[in-house]
Structures are given as structure tokens and as C-alpha cells.
Length: 344
Image 1: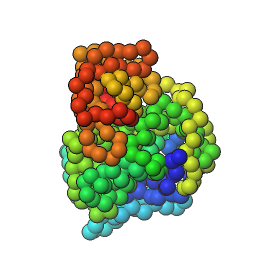
Image 2: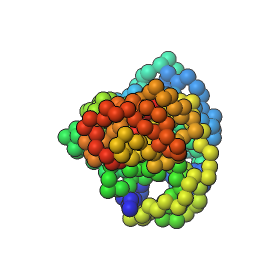
Image 3: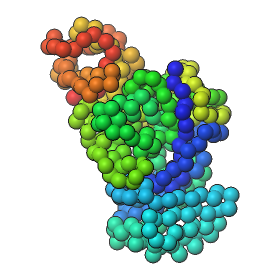
């Protein structure tokens, strides 16, 4: 059974966050203050609307900008200030009660973040919204056992916070977090629904401790493991309290409808758990309705034992229910559980 180790929120998008041991959660909302503030890039294409959503590409973030983890962030929510301090230089203090005063820091922001021909500026959202990467991704869950596999494979100790997740849970086995997709689950007295895996980008190449871009982690995952998915997105559907040490319990199926955003990876790319027996591959969950199965295509079967290995397997026919018959050339593949992506 999975155990919640800690929670993490990132009040200023892209910059160092805050570790929490407990939180009160409400349906449809993320952690209080998570991604509530952001620095709009000088190259921004879209302009934020309070309570609205614009693409992450418009903000200063780790994907495109180095050294953000070297800044210090200080948040005084009661006093109404956010302080951003660079490794060297004078801090910028944003008074949340005087939005017009935010322009006073424009020279500092321009010196720190020069991309584009517009003024980079400090922006905020309504409390129930955040500057997330997708308009539905207000909670993300990381399986620490999957992260451990990456540490072992790349022979490097890494702070799991580099993945910028909210819920850090130990499932004891790698990759089994994908078994939660389509499920309703409880942690503490809070109920969530899991609806999409999280595909990792260049952000995770940045060491959250030293702030250096030290490893092409997403690229290495794609080449060595055959996919770059790690963790899942979920939403709160029943209010309650959550705290470190709470256990995860599956309580049913998703009742909500979660269409795939246009800028999110397509469902055929998502890792799903399946069992191989001989040439028969049977998925453990109902396939996503947006997946179109081409019987001339291939599945990729990925090991879930911590090894970086995957194989292409051609589809021979579809079986009744959730299964497929694969072509017989399955040399070196033993019966058992696999992650599966495709068809391609």
C-alpha cells in the first residue's frame, strides 16, 4: 500500500517551493498558493486573465531558463509580500496589496530575465486557480519508487522535488502509479480521481538543490526506458485533510469526465499496465476511448522491474474484451506484467 511521505507546493512557478506535512483540500482546487504567482516572460504570447489559464510557455520556467533554483523565495502570505532574491544582487519585494507597485521591480526582472522584447512582470491568479502546465493539472502525484529507479539507472542521487510534483508517495514498486489511472482513491479523508499520466520535459533536467542543468533526464528516460512518463495528474473530488503518513486506498472508478487537452500527449503514448501470457496481452484497465487501434501497428512492452528495457511487439489481432494477440516473435519476453505504450 502506498504511503504519503510529504507534500510540496510551488507558490512562484518555476522557483523553489515549500514542503508541507499536511493540508486541507477542497474539490477542484490545488494546494493553497500552488503556482499562484508567476513571472510573465518578455517573450510571452498570451496575457493572463485572473482566474483564467494560459500556456506555460508564457512564463519564466525551468524548461527554458537556467538558474531559477538558485534564487531564494520568501512568502509572507499574512503580511502580503513575496520576496525573490537572486544569487547575487538586490531582492525584489512584491506587495500583494499594491499590484501597481509591482512595476517598481521591472528593472530588476528585466536584468534577471532578458528573453523577448516586452517587460517581464510578476502576475498572480485567483485562489482556486494556478499557473499549471494544463488547465486541469492542479495536482500531481509522484511515485518515489519510480524516481528511485531513475537514480539507480543514471547512477545519481537526485532530489525528487526536481519533478515539481505535489504528492510524494512511496508505492514500494516502480511504475505502478499508472494503475491508478481511471480510479478514485482516498488519502487521509481526501478523495481524488486520477485521469492522466505526467510526461516529463526538460524541467526535470535541473537539479533542485544546486540549480544546475546537470542531466538530460527526460531525454534519457525516452531513449533508455522507451517513454518519459513519471507520476500522474489527479483532482480532488471530496474535501478533507491529508498529511504525511496517510495511506492510499482505491475506492472506485472515476466518475468525472476528463477530456485530453490539445497540448497534452495523446492516450496511445500513455503507459498502461498489462499482463503477457504467451502471445496474449491483456490490459488491466479499460482502454482510453480516444485510442484508435490499428491492427497493423506495434505495442511497446516496457519492463516494470526497474530495468531500462523495452521491446516492440507487432499486433496480430484483437481479442474479446481488453486483450490482444501479438505476433509470435517474442524472444526473451517472459510472461508477466508490463507497461505498454502504443499502438504506433
